[in-house]
Image 1 (cartoon, helix red, strand yellow):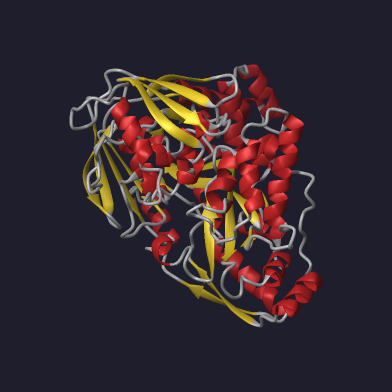
Image 2 (image 1 turned 60 degrees about the vertical axis):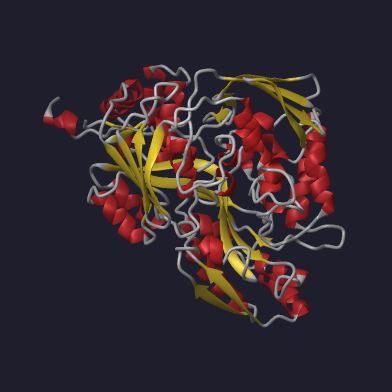
Length: 548
């Protein structure tokens, strides 16, 4: 290359959304000429367009190299970190789980599914019985064979009154898991559910060995074998040579957390870490202008929430909740706080990323201080405390903006900043008014079931709508697209506006966010599955180093 060529931009010079457009186009068969024409139409010179497309093609065609170590830093950890898939609550849990376990089904970047430990699966005509044929020759890290008994034991942990599973509501309509033979199981449904394979691809349904009750160690079937686990500190995992497919690419994965956003970014710049979750939107430009690192942005339905528990003050007043919803500066949040990396929220968890199940016809709740003041006066609340941790990049800024708007309507909203460490175990679901950030889920039904179903363990605000619960079940078996959309619109309206008694859910959802992470340019193989950080936590198996 000439010196001039070296100074031309590459695919890594682009913003996350532009890079995603080009890479996705090439992956789906767009020609070099077609992609170059897109770039030229947007103002690029022929030389610049050619450089960008060449670098993108080279990255996509590169063969993964074996060896080296990857160190990943999440944004939160604490004593509640766990290797029990059924109890996972955070990115650091999900990432560790992906390194050491597998699921029956795997979720693709486009949210379709493919076989994983189940080499094939199928349903009867009305989706009331699913058959999973298990892959033979798969072994756990202790050398024992993976069989149908392990599936039945894993799934049994999501049922019963004593179950501590955080996702048991997602499989509540499976009335029986039945062993057909050593490598075949059936799921017998109480009602139709076409979404079962994608549900089983989510993090809580990783397969564990029959009889496992202790999780200080992880005995999985995944590409890495855990050698060290210290909750709230770090974990180390080594590539397992007995893996049933090609396997991980690096020798060692270290997973830890750096809770301070500035310190986490500094660690990436200084090469102390290779991957980082949750890039502060204010730092995007700095990363894009720094050699050797890049932004990894994926559009999604993930969201920020302010949770007013509906069984205690002040959230037990529907008018207080409405007042908080009307003070939200949604467009300003997306533009100024998220730097354009997101979409406005409408106080329910579904956005355009969920496709046809998004209710676009539901009126957008706008910033309206007059209505906010009216509802605040009706509530009788004059002061409240919001417990805030930086559970997602921008959460604190969103809370402070709400505080300023609250003052305009006569509400003394105190912002109580609490540590990130241990937040999920000590504050969330416990204090009267707190914050949350939710990852996108593979379907709108799964998302609303996890966070809003009447019996959901993770119901942020303890709001219980029997009508919503009924719709969640009934909609899974509806094949008529118009009828299904009507039901999903009703569910989103229930959460955002309220039930027949006009009881809103207690959730204030001002914005949805892209997953905006950052990585070293020496790391390749990161996907774009939009259900979590760094490609939906899929990176442990597929990431690799270019410098080994």
